[in-house]
Length: 348
Image 1 (cartoon, rainbow, N blue to C red):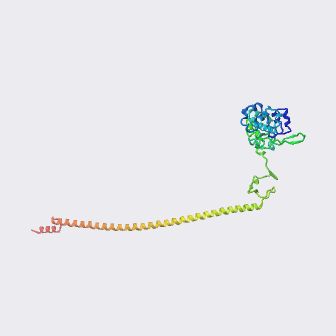
Image 2 (image 1 turned 180 degrees about the horizontal axis):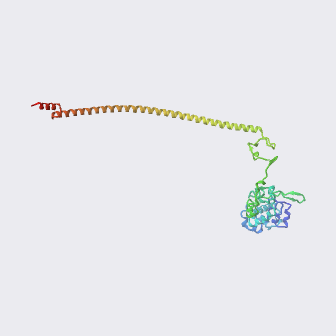
Image 3 (image 1 turned 180 degrees about the vertical axis):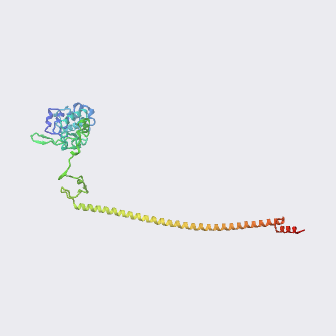
């Protein structure tokens, strides 16, 4: 935490905290209550962050006078310690109230964006670590973060100069600004309307967003623009060559894949035809063998039926001859019987 050597002498007649907050560039700081600093619980973990912690704390609480702290290194360490204590204090109820008054009086400054129309801003740190970055200002209307404007002051010679004091962002932290707006939500402004957004134009025509697109290494898309931006023809030619090379490689890869697939398909077709021919040959042989066996069995069956039929007819003829003989022997009704009847009728 930096401070002005020219203002250090004024600390002899006033409390150290009041002297620190009155330094040029420290307008964003509020005065931390003495009771808060004296409470050891609020200082937990800060002893390892600052060298000569006890001496720095005694200097802040005016336990030692300015004459006893001529060492500039001790004063610098005390400023760092006060910044860390300040970051914890401003997120308490009393700290938020103290910062509320400064915000209402626009002591933190206003937003540099024209469309925000002087919206009050809040101090914010991008990091919580001391020495990482300087303090920034946050606008709740456009939700953007800006560098604070440099403060002007009169030096000991009466000449105007810019403040070189760099306030560390850890003295405000990353939480305060947003916790402040959540606590005092009535202070949250409406966001920027869409029509309030600045639109870049060239000769009255809106600049198309694609005009800002870049291709490759710094080649502006769209060729030569109305602003006189020229594109290197050599880079375009190299880009086209690279594109054609990639396209040819892609096409050759596709051709190789297609030829490979065709070869595989032909091999599969040949294998299928060979398998079909083999299957057909086996089927014909089986059919011929089956037909031959069927014809043989049919011939054998026909001969067996003929023999069986001849035997049956022979047995029938023998049976009829035997019955006629039996009838003749037993005096049946044959031709001989008729002759005997006619002879009997002729006798007197």
